[in-house]
Amino acid sequence: MNTNFKIERKEDNATDALPHTCSRFHYPCTTTTMPRNITCTIPKLRKEGYLDDVPDEAWEPARRAAREQFDAVLYVHDHPFPGSFHGREAVDWPHYLAEFFIPEDTPIEIETLSAVMDPFFAEVIAKYTRAHSLNTNSSER
Image 1 (cartoon, helix red, strand yellow):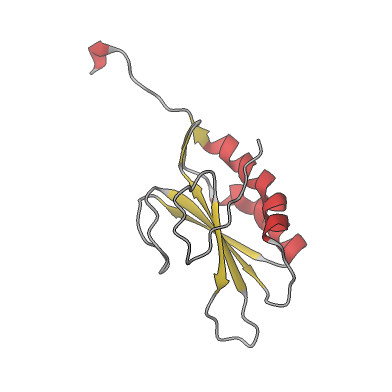
Image 2 (tube, rainbow, N blue to C red):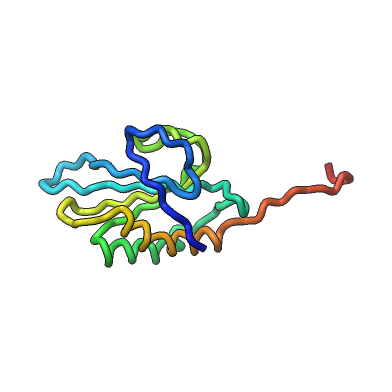
């Protein structure tokens, strides 16, 4: 399953958010080297079903890859409702927010990050997406 990242800079008004949207901006920090912050929004409502109940440890292979290949720290936030979180623009759907903190002096291409992380996110999506269930039995309505 190949999912592609889409770069969305903070000043853009991109509305096509599937399968992922990514943005890059500097994260405010009080250290002498400011980490770059790259985010990836992973919608819970998917064509295949609904992505939910992902345990924290399911993201560990992605965290390990981010650390080993980019010297990055990866946090994944569960946002069960549409809205604005962490001071960012509102997202109109429930989602997971993958947030990479990468040292300023670490060279990185967003395409490279996407290519490396894509299989890890795809694995989580495939494992934890429940198929849509439509009750068509009229006696149970």
